[in-house]
Image 1: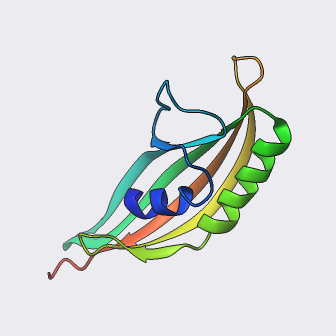
Image 2: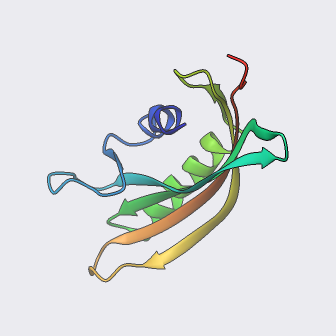
Length: 124
């Protein structure tokens, strides 16, 4: 799931990293983090389905760049579908875009939240 997301985010900006930016990263940049990932289980056991939440953070030196990049993230990732190496199929759905204030003066931060539905056959 994260690999698929990283490939798409790298088409938007060069600096993409899980969770935190490297000190050498320049802006604009994007970070992403899996907030939670909950497998679906029934009385008969695992179903192979999982629902996850992912946060994608856009960092820029201007409000307009942060806004433009967060809109591009939303457009490219919403309803993105793909299969990762372990065979799980994933579909991303946008949930929200938030404009956050960053304590560092001059850095604009927008957060784009996604829900991800995943399925991997438990018979393989």
